[in-house]
Length: 363
Image (cartoon, rainbow, N blue to C red; front, side, top):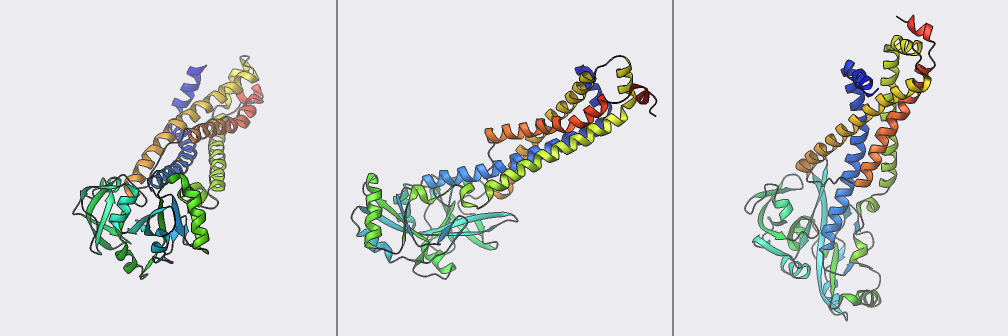
């Protein structure tokens, strides 16, 4: 039986290849979008976890997922340092900008020495930024052909000289001096938020409450709650993912249905011969379903391979992180196999109901 399925696929290589690619398309779409979402979310969480400050002090609306504004006065730094339980306070400007054709990247303006001391990052090469056109980057960004002494383009056409490489990764991958960022954004004496480190991390809630009492009217958050995941920070992303899954299932089912319907028409005489020889409806349906499942399985393999290659290409071109998710891989596999099986159901039932005499007379 299995040899019959394989021979049917091999006899019609073009139709089989198109069917396989149709299933692969649905699988690739699911894996690419979910892999990029997962990779970006995990990367953001990993870098955010290396920010050692326990508290973020900012204003309402100054930091929203993929956009920031520098609307907080740096004069708050001195006030925060006077709050009981505060060890240090470091102002930061985080700015998002278009990177390449599709990408969005971010850069931070910091007082390097203060930031490095608070976040326990160290320079593995070079020194901190001093001039307005100097920048330090983390090891991941440096691995993309950006050694010390090279230039990095920000905001499309502005060149910044790489003067240092730091580790571990913390916050944005690229950092200018705070003064350079203030000058570029025309926001002297301003920042996006202030990182606050407590003398005792266990007292962070009490310290946050004191800050609220002594400096009211601002937004005080714990660092652990401040940096949300990508899925939560982009409205509607979860709904988009569900719609994508449904569309992928529909594409897979329709492609297999069309392929199976075509092959039933092509093999009308063969089916008539099988029925004349005593083949049952169940046998004919199972034979067609096995062929559809074989095509769907090949589509899964091709789809996973295309997704891996696509994710690697996107990472090389834009720096976005792509991660295979086991849960989404199972969903993609279920979509491919179920879509193929359901798509072949109608053509299989139609073939099983053919009249043997009419099928044998079909030209």
